[in-house]
Image (cartoon, rainbow, N blue to C red; front, side, top):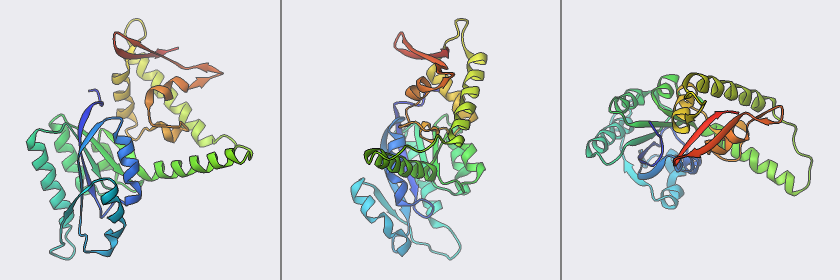
Length: 253
């Protein structure tokens, strides 16, 4: 299933997601399609929600107020789940992004996948694996924010002509791992000439590593094609990518 040109409903649980992450989430979703719903759920009479005020105006987010009727019960979750089902039945979207670090949305994600919709999760490292695994793709927002800050810091050093930082061993290890995964996918799924549709290749990547994001591997953006083109072993490109009959394909070089 190709995860591009989707019509996306973005539903944000303000109780579990900081406004600091919203621009990152929108940037990541842009590669998968158009975000038609931007809804933020929470009790905005609570001072904890004040951080979202500027984001609401800047990004044209629809604010859904939900008062906590009973102490200890999460009314925000219930309202978000009800709205999500209402949107599902309109038939106007084919992808949901659930921005939350709460495992309570696991069943909702599974329900959408049962209807053959793409489900993208967005949350922090603390997000329970049950919800992460229920999503087709998971956006690790705190890791991406830290990477963005590190890239800005590195760019600042470059402008000041300071020495570049030594290569990150952790990133190199991750690169070697994704190269190994990519090779196995192509050996198992390529045609007789060694080629595989890039969309099918990426679906397999996400099945094995659903939080895969090129930015976390030292690449400048989240686009997977230039990332896989850039991977090298012994100064030789690992993968070959070509556009054949208007379809992107990949093979081991």
